[in-house]
Length: 119
Image (cartoon, rainbow, N blue to C red; front, side, top):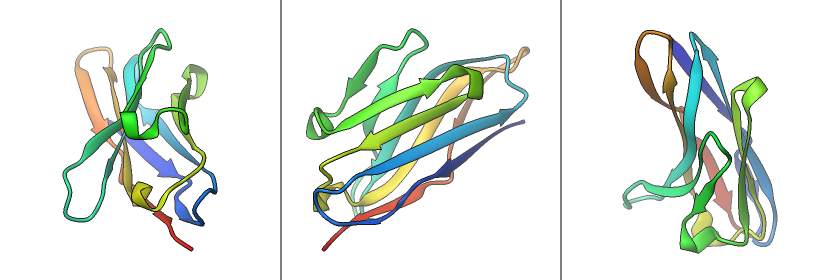
């Protein structure tokens, strides 16, 4: 079994910053792509940022220049540094990790962490 634990969400004022973390544990042989998604009320879940094994990244246009995704392969952890937060960034943020246990591939989602940007 592979488990993900997210942390770092909360309430922040517009212009503020937050850092989300997502740590994977369990039977993990290798991890491929790691990413962050978000879902605002009454909206579909959307990709925020993704990072590959080699460190290549891609971002949603709405967060480019404000958010930074990074990963610590030794800790099986992905981070999302969010700066210059806007009210429209308010959403539940989910991490997603794909990889290989040694005998099968896996895809796991975190439990979600709420980010609220409001004054």
